[in-house]
Image 1 (cartoon, each protein chain N blue to C red):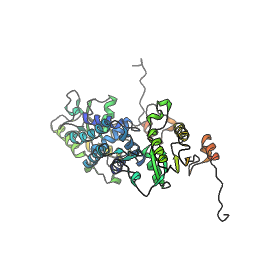
Image 2: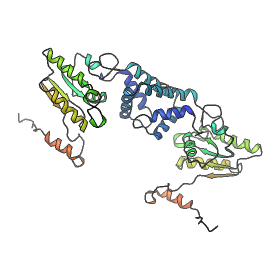
Image 3: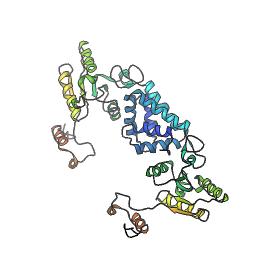
Image 4: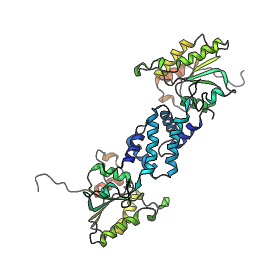
Length: 210
Length: 210
């Protein structure tokens, strides 16, 4: 096509390789970047390079980090006796936003999925078991390991797999609650979620009764 | 937030400034780029820089180009007596894909929109009128100027504005048809489109009758 010059075609192609960006969005983004202030395109390019140059995974928990250990692993204010196991660094971010957890993390970088050929050896499970064993050996086993993998087929399988291996080596192995999301509607909830919501029901503590 | 390292935060921020990419998508893209092959992030960064370094707008038609004149303006096989006026370079791309137009283009880089403070002086209208005047002066006025601005309020206003200024200086001023899109459904068409579709109706030529 004579209408499209080579550098533009190349950027469209590079953008459309990103997940969730189709050829049409890639075109629109490219033309936006062509017309946006020069600094915008350049700072995006610089940020891309910096992310690959400066970001590594934490040697301890495999969360993203700029040094050998991530800020959470280095933070002495965090409860080192609790571990929360998640699939992805994005999950750490989400949990941190909630502000409801003050322990450490372990990022698996995926979930067990035989269908996709992802076995336990493809994930950071050996390292997790190593951390647990180290703590045990030092006479200070983890008080709790929270399994916060996604409530999907793969996430549940991973949680089951880990629970089997961790039980007896840590104080307790827990699983995050599955149920109706806050603001959600029972009417539209799927059956499996309703089953989980019922199974996970808790006694209401009425104020003044205790 | 301690969980997010600076280069990652910077890339998320740069990506979420792009149109149509919210903070959640920016996060997902960033983590994709972190885990994708190194070459993918680098080639995207290089493509971004190249687009700004190598791409300019054509001096004649203001379409994107790598040289002072774009491939379409330089192509001697294109019909130089016809001009198609569009809002954006993406519109040139779309029309070229259709294969139904073989003349030259003029890209306005927007449409008249008093609400957004965009008057005719903010667009490449002076240059368009200059091209038309030059051809007239040379005794070879354009045979046709196709107004292919979008069928939006702004695009229609721009077309009306241009039609007034061009009539008498070119052979004919035409407007692209507005109607039901091919594959579309009358039932779901809005009233304005139906009005346009009826106004633009044409006699059917029955095979063998002529």
